Image 1: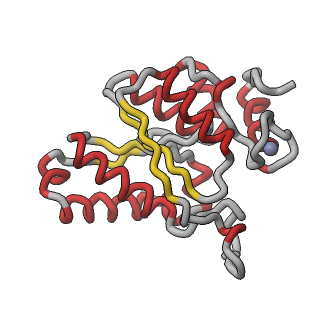
Image 2: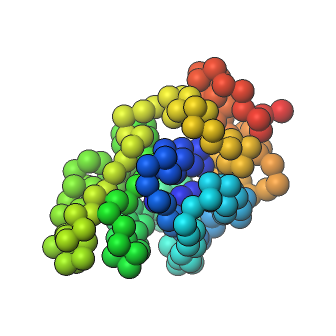
Length: 204
Ligand SMILES: [Zn+2]
């Protein structure tokens, strides 16, 4: 399970926890908000999973931190081939622990923006893992995205039904004690809770 501090990955974690034992991976890339890491740790701890491993990738940068790099149509938070890197770590972790699934919390909106969230990409990646690891092939490792057909408000409704602790999640792109309610992450959170008809415990 790939775990950030956000609502999507927390929802995927709680959904998976209903039927499977879960281990989670969180990636500390350059410039990630410390509040997001704190949120990921708190969510993993509350969910009572088997293990939460932090992977330090200090040289991996967001587009905004790479001089002269700004691909059109992608947000400044884009990380070049992020999921190629994250899922390779997850596959190594799955080989080590005997896990049969890698779960990501990408929602339907993500699949429209990022090529490395497409079904084609994950299908190719799964085949590559099977050809590169006898253990993963034997365990028939599958990459699954349980939220891929849900838009964010639907994810929030599902999260509420699963008891996801919204108060522990983090959506702000800035690093501070509280959400700023001005950045893209905060505005999207606000709009989607409203559309979902759910009260956000963090909104003042
Ligand atoms: Zn914000």
